[in-house]
Image 1 (cartoon, helix red, strand yellow):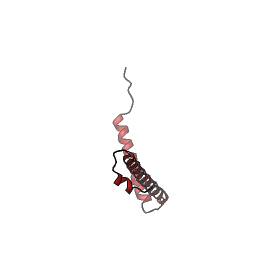
Image 2: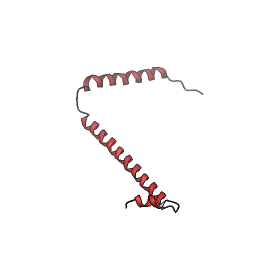
Image 3: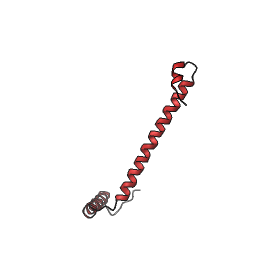
Image 4: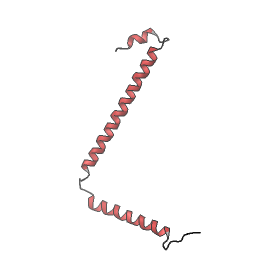
Length: 86
């Protein structure tokens, strides 16, 4: 048994698309030139910078751990061990 609805689904999707387009248009007209979102943009920049610093720190830590692991192996040349400063 199939349920039928009094409205067309395509009509509903078209209506939602038109409403979304209208809100985007109004936002561009009334909020362009205002700096109300300056705090949000600065917060976004800060979060992005924090992520970059975390990624850099993680990669440096991985490199340090990898070098320490290689130097602790028995087959490592003594000349390379002398280059490591603790």
